[in-house]
Image (cartoon, rainbow, N blue to C red; front, top):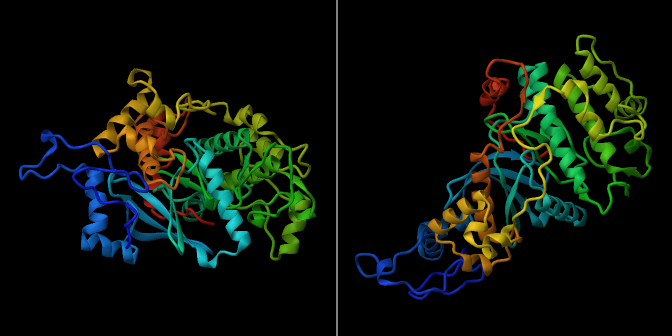
Length: 433
């Protein structure tokens, strides 16, 4: 029966497969007026998933998936669909990427495994967060952070090129995400405007890690052609091995050109002609593009990977110097972990984790629940709740605030958001290519 692996609490609570119940007995103060045990929100939810007819029906027809209430479709791809959903306990919006396992061949299964592996290690304000993975016999669900401000491709197609300051703010966040990814040897390999999402406040989120890979060393050679041809680096068309970071850098150059001009640098009627344009780096930057931005584009779109700008060179370029982030460009590794939430004394916890601990307890998730779950396993609903609550706390502290440009206006923070005023009119979320 759907939801049967979420064990129904009894008067004495024991741990189910997912350890969603507490083994402690209820005291008199935890009883309802009729003498029955007072259930926590978690216990009420797991009980309804096993006993409530309406909830069970929703699980059967797909209106519920695990702890998530499923709503309308917001995107689709070759092997998947993306739907809006809500967490039944935290009430947060999420993007539910639904994959039909029966349609995945061996190559697609390998790509999916890489996508999950990459997202498991990525924790950055400008990278879409993976909250949870829910696996059913015929479907796999990736529960992702919801970015409700649309994508870069739709914005430019609908409204035209970005202003110089909006381009700086957007590109700086993409650059921050890529620097972080490369620092832990994750290569995206499918950077394009459709995979650059915005939150409602204008924060950039790099998405869709379906072609990503994590390598032991960033200089290791790769040999798989990945991504969209208009964003592909010249070396990808030469049937040779290539290094990952310069391929992502090239795609960033194409993105930057698209942002500041509203057109693509390489355009052709056929794939053969497009290939030749890219190999020859045959493009022209319009003269009205600011000089510092022109120099950055030309430094990135060099045919030889060895001559192409490195990420650190891009960070130090004149065009981006006025950009100020509200947080560190590449945050250090967190000093605490999921395990520390359990093992540390309350006074030893960081402020965010203390806030999360309090929220977990209010929902009925205790330290014992956490100990009995594989805390780094995204297939645990407890991990999903934890990650959502942690992200909530981080957003309250400004981690999703976009950078600002010094000297742009009297109130840079307000105007930094105003630079994205058109985003609120774009509701479509494109998590997939």
